[in-house]
Image (cartoon, rainbow over all chains, first blue to last red):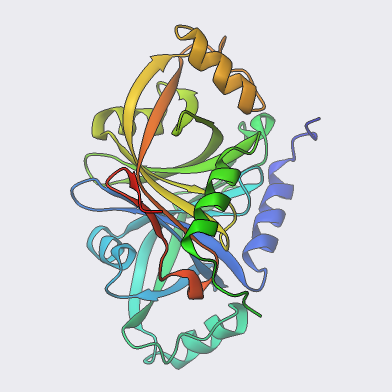
Length: 150
Length: 150
């Protein structure tokens, strides 16, 4: 049985609550310039309305993101998803930004600040969608062009 | 506390068991020719060692897949993942292949066979990896170039 569709205000509140959950993960989809898709799960920290991830600078994901500047992110299980199209706002060595490092460690369940070669990638949401089942496809867009619609 | 790393035989058995689970979903990452990443969750049916999904032929995912022929798939939660790099083996209208349609409906929890404009996309795994936590990164590759290594 499918639950009644949530209104968009509820979806936004649910979305912000899930993003603020400690020790949560995010699926990060990126693509190479040649159009090869990549996808990995990593830890997420929601800091100042940005998705922050920490990742090896030599990874496929970091390479794709610094080259293209865009990613598509998913948080939550497949039938209660938050989908985020995001742009790369900045990439910074994990040891070089104390404020960001402290914020990340305060939310994620590991500390990358001494991981050699790792970078924080700060991703700014441009479009946010949230849905559970097919009856929530209408009204799923909560942010467009970087602006919350609700 | 992190559990002891599974050996590769166990990971293959776990992988095949999760793929055969009824009503399971898969994250499908694709990319446009211009390098724009896309990601959606859809139902998965594991049929004859292929990942079968049913999707609107006009969707971004179907367009990307039929153009590029490649996808990266993820099954399971972020800390118990099966990652599959796959190639498109065939795309067929949902109403035109009775055997495939029956197999899909026998595994998924919905019936797309009368959904106008939907296609079955049959994806052949080329590389399969499975890991839970960081201690399972070594030994994560279970299939390479379409051949099981274990």
